[in-house]
Image (tube, rainbow, N blue to C red; front, top):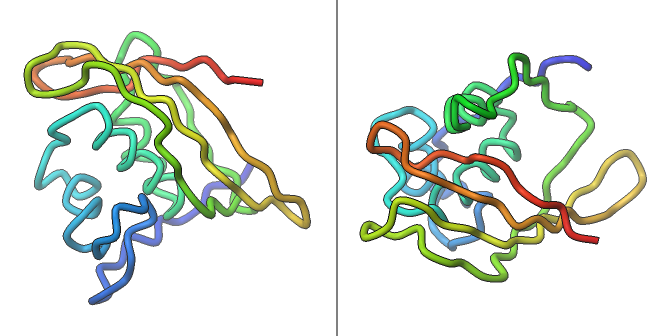
Length: 138
């Protein structure tokens, strides 16, 4: 699989892929650049989705818990993430050390469309939210 160059430009007004409605420059870009940390498991989930959407494999890998982080991570350059829907969350706030986020992410790959439905687990590691793993639903 080839590596995809991140498209992390902060063009004014460029919408954030995470779907919260703000501009990428103020939403997920600061997390991708490391100038701000996610305040919740949901925010980390959204920033990871955005990292997949812009091709930022380094952020995806860095935000993965060290115990489950893959050695190599190549993003498919043909994959286009087209939408994120958060279905439910448990825990994952400033008052928790663990949380889950259930989501559906839509994509286009070649001529096909589809979606990924996952219940992801997050935990704090060294004070920061990290992705541990997830169960892919039907």
